[in-house]
Length: 239
Image 1 (spheres, rainbow, N blue to C red):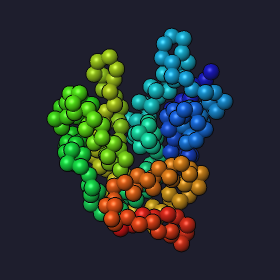
Image 2 (cartoon, rainbow, N blue to C red):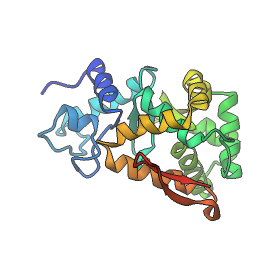
Image 3 (tube, rainbow, N blue to C red):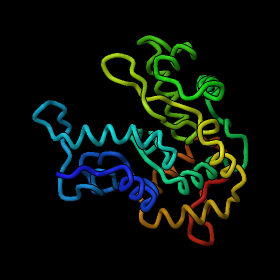
Image 4 (cartoon, rainbow, N blue to C red):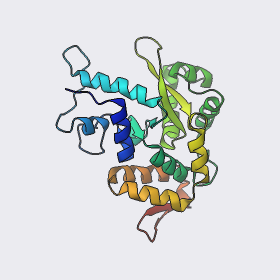
């Protein structure tokens, strides 16, 4: 069966605004590159010679797209491989930044990792762990929790892979460094523009909206959070 090509994949991501790479438990939503390319076929994780080679080919396409600079690769939605169009990524980042200090509420470890990546990006998993001092099995939980903080705010992105042995590791970089233009656009974007762009996107992406609101809420001081319904119908969380 024909494999989805880079040009078609980028077009699909830009059309939908956000696509996972692979579906979660073969659910129809959120949409993924797999479900867009092969809507009638379930995806099975089989990496041996008898497995579906479309899975491994799409995984390699993911790496190619991540460093294309035409779309943005993250581990945002439920920690899964997620691609964004530049338009939706910038609007969502703008909402997360909120015109305020982007590091508010981040743990000490997350701040340290971000500082490292803003000095040198992208870095492999091994290099990032070594630079941050989060090496070894005892530090793994802290490392993963720290990356989750940064992924969730879109402050870091995936950018290619680095061969570190049996299996290549994702190269991770600072959004501010690798996509400086988008970061600056996000900082300058008005709340109204961000909300309008996301409102249109969420019309066909209810699960993404739910995750977005939960994520946005998670890094605000609990005592300062209250839900407010914007006149447009868009739900905001404000301090």
